[in-house]
Image (tube, rainbow, N blue to C red):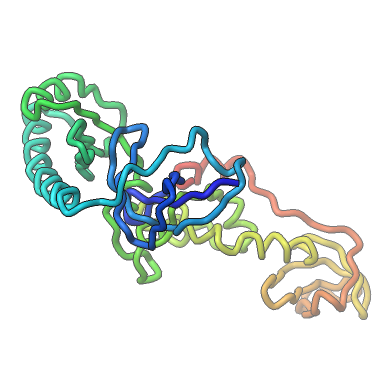
Length: 288
């Protein structure tokens, strides 16, 4: 076991563990720590606590100090520099005639590096741009191409539900989302209904997936053969949340309407299955 504090470097970013060197920190305290990128200022997201050694990435780096007034002043100065750097970057991109969209600019705390986050449709040869920027800023330049999900996380906005983006408000890390989740949950496979503002599958598909997987284990699927109080039949429709089935009975005329049963009223003879065919995977692969 080791005593650690959790530190975030972005408002809704990943939490990293650091050694508090015997100091007791409170939530939202600003601290100066050493990272792989150099000295950085972060915000305490989890207070002092002990965690198992296997949860720690060794060697555990130590906190350098609690942020001072001078440190906070430097952060404000860096924020002003970032706005100026954004204008210069866009000007240089225009001069080099590159198809790039700037998303964010970040100065490291010690000003040893400037990171420009951008999006582009494909690979971009920005070597000449980096040299040009380095001659202007006189420091290390890093250009980092990001995807549309990361762009949404950085910029924020409102989702189709009317609430702020999950990724920008509380999701520290993206979770894998697949088209199979939409199939499991019985959702329409229309891109406009299952994709977010970023154009990818909605992150919220992941939230209830475990519950749907559990319900699917004990609910006959469409195509299953079941035994009902009125005889055998074929499941033609299911409602996982209400745990009801519509069954086409074998001993009724073809024109007869399916009967509705609770899952507990039927006995499974042969289950069906949910299938995602290759055509669907190909059609929706760009959403994942």
